[in-house]
Image (cartoon, rainbow, N blue to C red):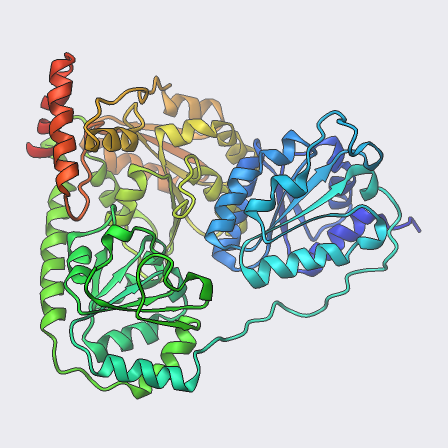
Length: 575
């Protein structure tokens, strides 16, 4: 019987922890690990074209399942490519383990070919980062990394020199044989009484919920009913809060609704639940603010807080609800809901086919997609304008899911996240809302769809520009520069990669092309030629922003680009 190697024990330990896939790119320093994967049937190697995409894909799997997902990179440049995707995983607090292969152990410290210091490189995007230098450390170091990623929510990195992976294992097998713990956290009885007393004595309460409301939908709705409180959600809370919610008044922030902004600015008490919403300018200045979060270090991090409590949302609300009285004052709620209906109508009016004119309004594309997509579809969206349209026009219903780089804000996240979702959820419909800039940045992993036979559907918003960056420049009064994209025909490129490639050039082509893509038995890409000059207005316009747009218009005219100002008016005023 062959002797078990350290790499064999590593793979066995991951399998025992429930890992089913490892995303990565092969390399010589990973040979021991990939050979161990080849010899067994529990873990599948997911061959990506770029390690950054591998990290994004692993993060998407972890986001949806809540279980540990794994990515790997070979020594030096291989694992360095993981870092941006790992930053996204870490900031999104999803449990991901990264295997960072290292050079020969005897050469460490000599400036050897491809030598880096993983312990230093990954320190800022992980809770745990250690090197296995001796066989005796396996599986203990790996299991500590697994437990840290699961318990703290985030990234662990285990570095291992290629030669150490090929040595004989010392331990017989995994040491941990229990499922991931699932504790509940609740404020003390005294704190719950204090919170209940304060809420019972307050009027005009608004709830701001985030991703920490996952799994607490029933309790959240009951809370809003008792308090007669409108519910505003942050972007990462959309998929958990928006559906079956008669108290929903939309998002706030740069991507949000004027109704969400109004409900927060007009309240006397703001109750924050499981959110780390970062934009200080969107918090009320004079309201009393209560924050409940399972992470105590986040209390008061974004705004002044009058009451802070440590607890998970579901457990805390279950303890709080029996102590609350039914509010009789519903004026604030009614006003907020009426404003929400007006705000939604305003956005719906923008999502038109433009009377068949070119270019296509991107809002119309997402509204059509929302109608056609499966009731349990999973969407990923690139940062920038695809995130805006997803936030405003995709409907969450309790079965659908929505992923993006909402905390880290990285370009090129949508396609690799969609790959991770599709290979881990092969029975679900998966749609990537990709910007032309984001898709081009990690374009190589378009090839992964064909190789993996992953039937992801990609909607490409082709406007030949970094459109959101241009909007930021216009708002600052700057004539846009360095944002042009000379793009290929993405549909033909997709066909060359083995996908179904389709193009929608006019509004009447949008629906049939999306239908054809969604019905296709395999990966498909729909290239939609959308307006470059579509404005996405924030819920409130500051004086500086208005001044910035005015300066932009003046500078554009004076620099000979007055046609852009005319195009802006045509696209946004003449629908």
